[in-house]
Length: 368
Ligand SMILES: *Cc1c(COP(=O)(O)O)cnc(C)c1O
Image 1 (cartoon, rainbow, N blue to C red):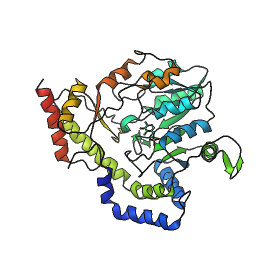
Image 2 (tube, helix red, strand yellow):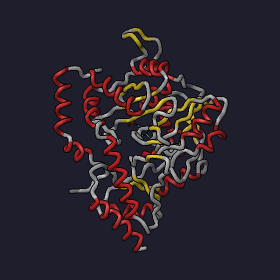
Image 3 (cartoon, rainbow, N blue to C red):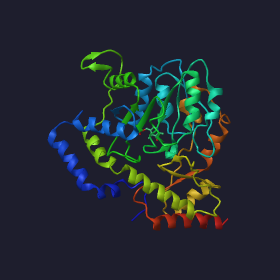
């Protein structure tokens, strides 16, 4: 069989009986919207993360937008984030009329460098969105310290990091709000789109719930402008089954990552950095590779899937011209974009496949 970057079907086959039963229960109930599974999943995720409130929504992108809307972030405001992330992080800032204010990354972790935040703060700054990229926790203590010192909100983009931990705490539970994506390829993936926002703050949670439901607490009475963003009952039922396996699946990813790193020893690639006090959950296994594009072509010639997350940093994307950045503004980010390469990473990855992948990489560098 052809190797895959992510194997969602292989994973489904192992839990097919449980998933199919859950799906049929929902189909028989007819409660396709706001069925009881949605509330059950909210309670389960809140308990897992150790937060008081969780609000399900339609995607990770919506989760970010709803969190910012609930915090009344809008035109004229600035939100500090990383330029080295999936587009949704900054797109939602821009859609609300606010401006993404980027800070460069820490080259070891690929995550926003907390030491650079202070210099990016202006009187318009309202919030910071750290992104736990690839499942690697951001160094949250200094992020929270600078946020508290300046009265800024912190929204953790945890789309790639559900289950990751920072100094004994689950990421997504550290800031004022945390955003989760259940996109199929994420560590806890639905069979379609889905998302969730979590918070310790009851007032904020109520506002998030209101924003996600057309700005209403009581149906047909609209207090503020909101959006329509719900998690389907079917997806919630599937996620309730899959969530029971999340920690075991994350542990499998960590094992596979360790195997890659061992197998790649002695090659010129730089394997992912792992902070001893953090639990990286390897949503991606991302290397820095000399002659990256030639290596990618070599992998392709051997039918080995791979990906570049992300080839163009957000500050250089046309859509974000309003932020007023130019090439050279964030050198570590630009360097990372030119060097990163992600290898297949999923719960069905075999040691044999990993050996083939790493032998192919070794062969590429041995040929000079
Ligand atoms: C996937 C992802 C999102 C968006 O999630 P969707 O569910 O696809 O909308 C946001 N931020 C990051 C970092 C992501 O990886």
